[in-house]
Image (cartoon, rainbow, N blue to C red; front, side, top):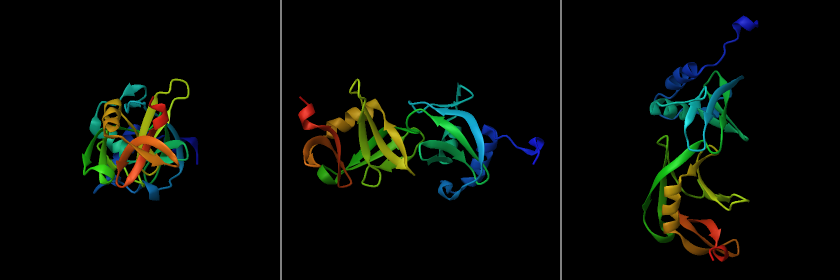
Amino acid sequence: MTAQNIVKPTAEGLASSARAASKGGMPPVHLWDPPFCGDLDIRIARDGTWFYLGTPIGRKRLVRLFSTILKRENDDYFLVTPVEKVGITVDDAPFVAVDFTVTGSGKQQVITFTTNVDDTTIASAECPLRVVRDPDSGEPSPYVMVRAGMEALIDRKSFYRLVDLGEPARHDGQEWFGVHSSGTFFPIIPVAELG
């Protein structure tokens, strides 16, 4: 193959392929393993903003479309179609949980998160919540699994609301403060650290 025959991936080409592949719901990206075509200058910032060539992508429908062809392999992220795979940069998590609803109460309550790209996910053993603390500042970064090994960073207002739902419970032999969803307890902070 000569250099003239190599097609360089573009955001427009990916969008067109994604539209074709997503007729009738989420495309089956887990089934696709096309050849790697290089990196594309697309970045997802920690606040969930998508950038193309350094400029924010302002069209929510386009961001949603790209999010449906997002795939994680180890610690790398790709946009994939049946015929091409391009690497992109993700600063933290690829999604941001911007809201949630609660049904039921106590240990059987169900917490359903909505992301910045309109995905919904129910916190459960299959889609766990986790909180990572910055080793220097102690600042919490809460996450919930959305799909296929990809998480959403829970935004600050939603995290504060989660904390309001919290209660102490025994977890791994220690007393923790956390929340229940779908019959699973998700620890947030050891009770001893609440001071």
